[in-house]
Length: 292
Image 1 (cartoon, rainbow, N blue to C red):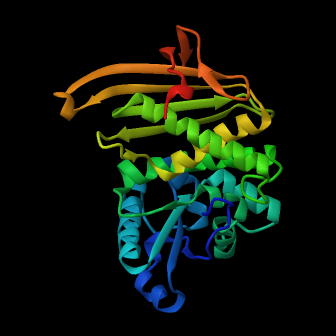
Image 2: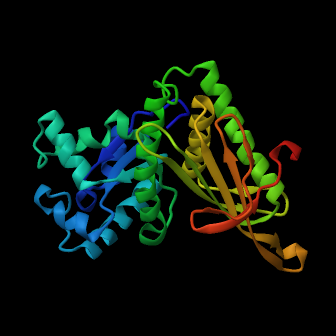
Image 3: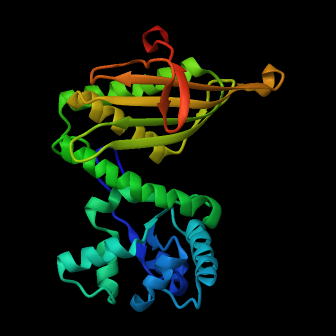
């Protein structure tokens, strides 16, 4: 998915237990797309649609892991999204499709408004790593569509100068928060009070001593989009950065920190002392204007 939401054309399957990637790779080319059931309850609910021949959810996960690993070896790009039974039923109802047919599943997976929920698979462990990210990606995708609606299509469509400037400034504010915090392991949470419901984003961050930052791409995209919406529409918001500050180079010394900022819509400034955000009590954040 590109910044403006234009997705690459992909080859996809919706029945992991029955799919053989090498066979399709010879015909279709470069990319593989699939939907994954992310809980036992969703697996049971989807039984009637024959997405898999697996007898139970544990077997389904094993089959899916094998298919993903084989696809990762075969295709240049492997992408997946959460196969959400309720979303799928609503999609079929809206488009008058039979949910038991492969064509309905294919249309659901490649539906353009849902492309924000796609994740690239790069060999991660399925149950403990990739599936939790798929669940978060669905939630993030819904938030991104909400933001795009608020910005009149400016997030994924034709981007206005105001939206572009707000996005760049939001990304810069995030960068300054991380630079000011220094090395450590953190979580950032930000919220914006918007029409239609609160916009929320969170990201776990590993900030190394040499300045390198590790963060999931989808989390970075969502954080910047939430900041962008608040700044572009001048909506009130807040941000909290908390975690363990320090590094092994500093003799392994770490300390717990929590900084908070508030925004009236134009900028982010230190929040009042004792501010409670996401259940954590924080001190006023450092001035972002003084961070280079």
